Structure formats: C-alpha cells, structure tokens
Amino acid sequence: MTSTSASSRKALSKIACNRLQKELVEWQVNPPTGFKHKVTDNLQRWVIEVNGAPGTLYANETYQLQVDFPEHYPMEAPQVFFFFFFFPLNSLFGFRSILTFFVLLCQVIFLHPAPLHPHIYSNGHICLDILYDSWSPAMTVSSICISILSMLSSSTVKQRPADNDRYVKNCRNGRSPKETRWWFHDDKV
Image (cartoon, rainbow, N blue to C red):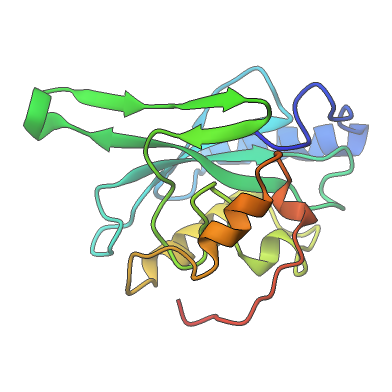
C-alpha cells in the first residue's frame, strides 16, 4: 500500500467509472493471456494475477499486481505495483501455499519478494515508462499488463535493480512510485 491509501483516495469521476466498467467488460470477454482479474467490489483497485510466460525465466511463477486508479483515469495513469506472490509448494507439501503480505503503517512487507527483475524493486515498484512519463489515455489495463509481461519475458537475468536498497529505503514511508523521478535508460532488459 502506498501514500494514496484507500481511505485517502478521491472517488472516481464519472468518466473514469465508465471507462473502467468498459475495460472490465472487455477483460471478461477477452482477457490478456497470462492474466486473471481477481474479482472484488472495488472498481478503483484491481488485483491481477500474473503468470510467467512459458519458455521464460518466469515460467511457472505467479505474481500479483495491484492497480490503483486515480480520480481522473484515463487522463492520469494508474499506480501499478507487485504486491504479493504465490509460490507453489506442491513438491514439499502436496498443496499450493499462498504467501501473502501485511500492511503496516502504509508499508507493504513481502513474505516472498516481487519478481526478481532489473526493473522491479523489492517493494514491488516497477520502473516502466508507460506507467509514468509515457502514459497515454489510449492505454488500458490490458495494454499495461501486456507491457509488464513483455518486460518480464525479455529479461535474461533475474536480479534486482542496482539501486534497489537505496530506493526501497527512500520509499519506507509509503511513498508512491508515481512520486519518483524515474530515469528510463535501459530498454534492453
């Protein structure tokens, strides 16, 4: 959870509600491959299960994205980050164990990390230009998901960003990733 917690967020505008309802219907009819929308009663916060693409470093791994929509979506980009992780323990216990997160003072504490990727910080923040500087109102939740899966799939190494520890330390008080001045310099990972 970030500084824009559920209680402090402004309600969605009528335009945002209509757009999200339309996107949700489209998602139900034609969901992007590798993603599952977790049904909730909150249109302003979507939880999406991400399955790693076959043949990639993330194959057979499942992660959770949280997408928080601002009052003026789609004119303003949603806040998107990884917030919990599913890890199959079939070989150890014969069942699927779910490792969840705890929210303490607007901080997310992971029991198991977000995906190891050079553009994903251990607190779940994602360094991806379309979520910030390159956002366009023509983008949808589906297009965001496809971009994130593409980013994961093209990775050749599982590692944290070089500045992970410093960045996460600076975000301790629940700072939103949208408050970060990102430097988009590496499109090869």
